[in-house]
Image 1 (cartoon, rainbow, N blue to C red):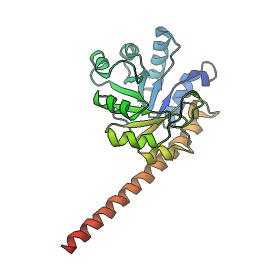
Image 2: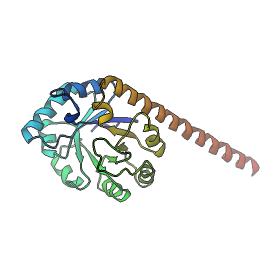
Image 3: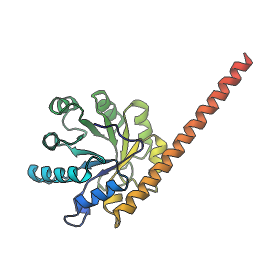
Image 4: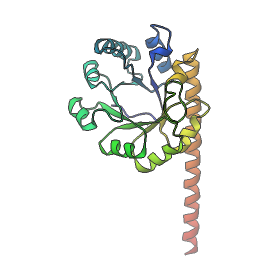
Length: 234
């Protein structure tokens, strides 16, 4: 799988948020306006229906974004997309690797530090961590807050996307905590204008990323000045 852009804006599909028959067009619009990764997550579809949807999205996206499918390694293989997103307690990463073609990527959904460490040790290419904030699409899930992002990043070395209630107003909290990007559903698909919503999220994400990079550079320069001063005193 292609390396995830940094910062990465991922879109998880939920056709229940879209007027009937418009999911493919709305995802294409989101990709045209800055989505880097699309995760197809339509659990209620039959294998045949899901394969048809994946094939339509693959054609519509035309390589402009990474395309993965939730859980269904068989559909990933049949459609020839970029990879799979495995649930926390789903198929093991090693089992998925044995089935999938070389170069296909594996993401793992995690909800705790230990799960993230386990997924990393098993060879997951990236993690999706949540639920960070209260989510309209998953109201039953307890929000863990951005502090968990920092805890996971201290223990892992693979890209991490924050998911769950992420909006342009709170995305900076995820980036400050160390996320490499975010995954959203309703913030884009539930919007009246998908293009505007995507650009708003993309702009907020880029601004938060730039602020974090500037802070990291300032810290590095400060440390270098301290080191130079210490050397001068010797």
